[in-house]
Length: 166
Image (cartoon, rainbow, N blue to C red):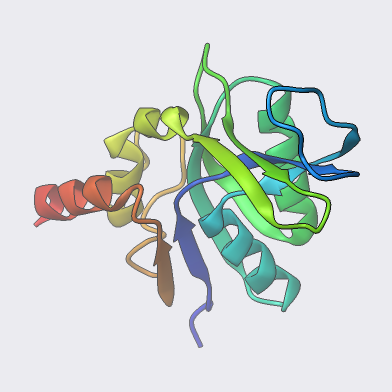
């Protein structure tokens, strides 16, 4: 029987979540707690699949900063194959910042996913092909996977790779 695995293609970011101890006072410093963790919708889906025992490979782009190390370490600890994550020189990793009020409801959030624009099309093309692309990633893993989790943030790249291969 063939090896069964899934591939996630999408965002990986650092989630910064702050929760105020009291009702939020606009235009003021609000005492509270701040937590940091690896996040991103596709990465979170891969994390849950891996924790349930699935073999999961993850394709994404991160920066070359401390957050990239945290994202990759926490993902690998969950059981995700992070060998297909592209580390972008000179860029910061994606970040998501959520501010919650004292009852836990989101007051505001900001998302910076610019590093995903640096995910080389060659990585996705290499995922389809039977050769090793010059980035050094193992290839052909998309065609032989049993399922692909695709973020809408990267759907245009995936379609470009599909059209190019066809």
